[in-house]
Image (tube, rainbow, N blue to C red; front, side, top):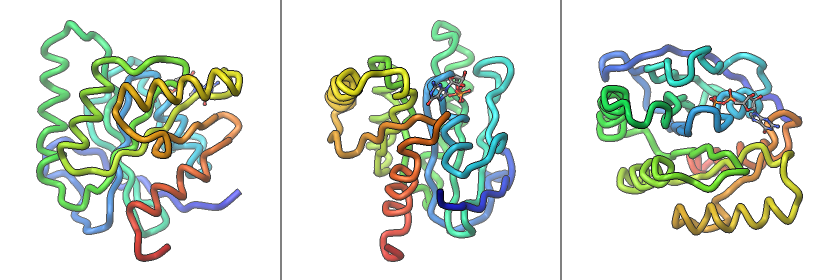
Length: 197
Ligand code: GDP
């Protein structure tokens, strides 16, 4: 298991609060409960670096982490709770829009999806949002320990098709047993730091 250094930088909403940095950045986005916090913790071998808020969808900030002194991971609030709650969707858009637009070092989106579920409209929109913002899209397909190998392969195909991405960009992970996490970390590094590879 590879060791990775991870340091919490800050939580912020507005542009003035984002960390001043030129380091390449990847944003982690996903539906609430998809397994985003567990995944970030598994990637850097920490128990509680990222934590799920006790109330789903409550956290309304971007959390920035410095990884191995060379890149930044940003944890975006989980989306998809209270779908009919317009003010919550608006708050989310107000937080994310400027971030996607005015963060030039943002290079990649790690879209976290529950491997047992078909992507929903929010996942599809988030993926399109990332593509539209010229980000490399990497999909983390979580909770694969709950699937047989054949079910995992079937779901992977469905996810690729629904999100219009290549299956090679989908990384199956089991965050609890840390299966697949090093492959995913390697891919993020490859995208963010292409020359270092
Ligand atoms: P978040 O809301 O996207 O940050 O999701 P969490 O990381 O809090 O995970 C939601 C629930 O799914 C928790 O009960 C986790 O323990 C569980 N979970 C997350 N990843 C995995 C995984 O890879 N395998 C299994 N079996 N459970 C997982």
